[in-house]
Image (cartoon, rainbow, N blue to C red; front, side, top):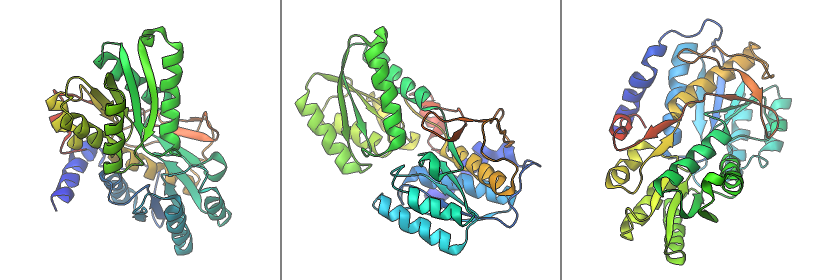
Length: 339
């Protein structure tokens, strides 16, 4: 109940100004199937709140689900169930961008539109991808954050989710490219990536192994909301607060303790409520033919300006919200009841 009330407050605070739906988009009579990476994840629970707000405005109905184990097979079963139910559009955050191609192509053959969001599916299996910000912008933001925290010198590593997580792999690729090519980071030694598989305990354990293997490590980048608090807790438990800095993509509510303690100078996240909200508008616009998902299409969404479909670097087309919120000791309390 506490979590439900928090999400209701979040809708009022974040989406309260969006009370009037765009005249260009309607969802009347539409049925949407929302698929996310894993059930019980607070990040995706918040995103569902955005779908709920859009449903109230646009008039569509939707169901949502994700596998308990965060598996590709679990997502395939859920997608097939939505196909059997006759949804008009699928909104999918993929655990494996290539693993869902067959089932999503089957959905499209049935006339079902496919929108990937948060984590893309391969271009041949979707009509449009919706993302909070460009992969390059996210990766470079995280790198600059950790570099500033450690004084642009010392050893760093990345604690990611799964090895097949396409969005995280793309962010990391931009981090690695900048570390190699940008002289700003010439004194930073990159130790590579370890994977916590978006499990709290495993993320904690791989961090512990890193800390023991590299006692002089100075910084950890954690581009996963599950991994962020696990990595930070490990640093704190090992009495390395201040010696090892953490940054990443996290929920403010999960990280306030660690930000205030000095484990993190700052972490970041787009608003998943807004991401679910805009994805809903895009899904309805695709089904109704208001947009086709082609480069140059524009989408009218209350509270957002300049939403335009562009070409994705990984293939297909993409729509960016281009909002990333920093959580610092001065701002984190403003966000804990929202994210």
